Image (cartoon, rainbow, N blue to C red; front, side):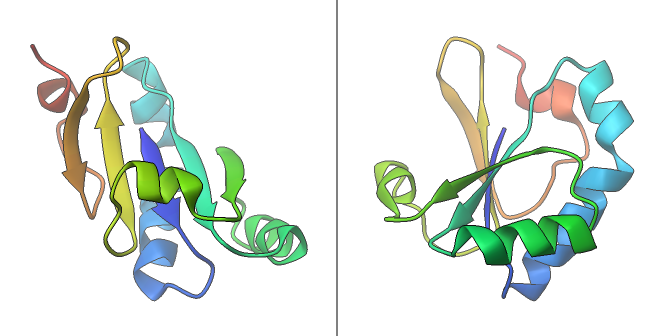
Length: 104
């Protein structure tokens, strides 16, 4: 799961709290979540990650190249990708049933 977000986005903060609360459930389903910050400075993102105790890998998309690749519109955005690279869903929140999203 790629999760696109930014520190200035209040809905992103809610989504991060939801991710942190559900970390064990997510990992028990063998799902990897990578947070991708949109266009912010590393020091800002690092301070935010510490403050909100982000428990997932965080990458920076400084030039929005990755966001453009996925034709991203708005934040937060979750992109659910199967192991074979096929995008299964694009949502603005964490789905309740991860198993269903990744079904064939």
